[in-house]
Picture (cartoon, rainbow, N blue to C red):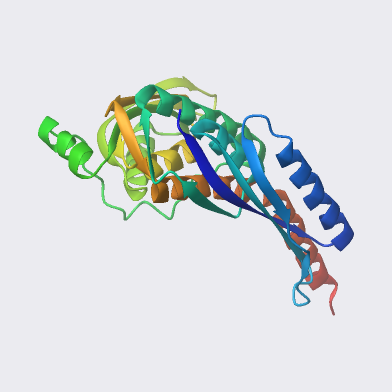
Length: 276
């Protein structure tokens, strides 16, 4: 698989300058020791203090230029959750369907573990007023989406829970449309039901999405199965790759920061209650 060169900007936040300095140095050393990628350069910036921030006043940045196969670069983005990503080269890559499925499988597995630990990522405004999307397209329309819009036709299976199969499926279709998907097929199947009537449902979906959209959905839903149908080879531009890497890193950062944000909120609430 083609080698990708990127620059990761890894941010660190803390309430203690010395502790943050040590953590940033340890992160830099751990990154340098990575075996799946080539590390060209790692620079740790000086810690900056924000006197107006009374919870996490110290921040630092690591700038790391690395290269490696597509899967390895994405895995590194998941592990280090850079605040920003810059793709240096190449301007475009080609990935076959098998390689793309392997990439998606790795993202789904890693994000699934984080979602199990920190909670779900997929959250939407009320879908009640959102129009029901069209489901089903002709072969000619699908080919036009693939050729003209550079969309990918794929199938994936996700786990959902709810009291009513029809309502769950309808809302899931609306959520997919909200995410920017084109829905060709949607097939729900109830797997089990608990004593309270809550159903465990597998929904098989056949969708068309751009590469970045496909990566986003895989990270958010952590599908239990996924298959790329068309095209046989997917071309990905540097901006698309940069966006997808930033999306995945952002999702990881959002999940892993939840405990810290919760503690900060609890501290602020406690201080508010203690103030006369």
